[in-house]
Image (cartoon, rainbow, N blue to C red; front, side):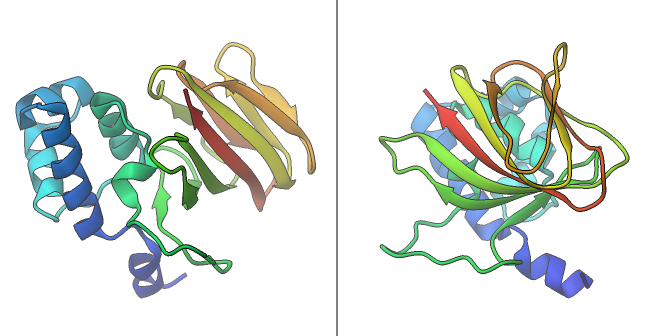
Length: 190
């Protein structure tokens, strides 16, 4: 994928900026408080709210936890009644620490609190995910390859067609056991 294609398929900074500002105001929190809760520099949060910077999936997850909102609420623009996302399209966010990308396919309406992602993972580094908002449950169905995922203390191996769910509000991992591993991830936020 070229740099231009990567930029066009990643989550637009203007959406992230608008969403962070909206959710921080809704929560009645200062920049300092949100940055502290998320474990990110205040300058990083300020840049993101200004529509600059280069957020990773880890940074945005941490901000979602700090603001008590699903990740999708920070990266997705409200969509039409019927939505189609073609293969290779959609907001793609890479991991800082693993060959892992998440593509948001659908976020739950305000009352449902569930999000749908296409996850692509390559062998190499394991993605160690911090806990998401309280009550989160991750539902995973592997499409291609083999994937080790689940709570850090008891990860499981899934093959194509296998399904598992596990608590997303505790530390967990994703690790590809072969190239081209893909899975569908449903994040349920209770």
